[in-house]
Amino acid sequence: MPMLQITIMPSPPKEGTGVSEYVAEALEIVKKSGLKYELSPTATIIEGGLDELFKIAKEIHEVSFKKGARRVVTVIMIDDRRDKEITMEYKKKSVLSKVKG
Image 1 (spheres, one colour):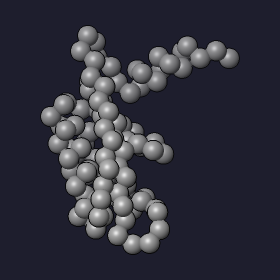
Image 2 (cartoon, one colour; image 1 turned 90 degrees about the horizontal axis):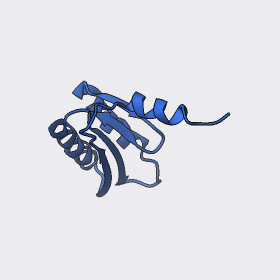
Image 3 (cartoon, helix red, strand yellow; image 1 turned 30 degrees about the vertical axis):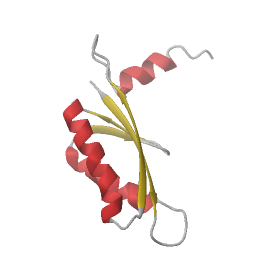
Image 4 (cartoon, one colour; image 1 turned 120 degrees about the vertical axis):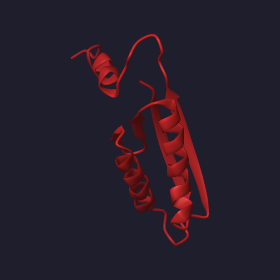
């Protein structure tokens, strides 16, 4: 199943550099989508069909503007393997099984 990793970097309209309230708004969009996701300190990974993933990426990009950001940089990476079904869990288990110690 395709996976999308997305990071947003909005420029808040007020003083400070914190963006957690913007990320929280983006995460609400992900939760409402019903797609499987995992939040990390610097990105969110979402599993779904390509059309769903591109749609949600656009919604996530736009939500910070609706919240007042003057500028938003969105970084997207897509992992789409077609020779076999993969999931976030599969990928993590594969790496951890090879870690020594």
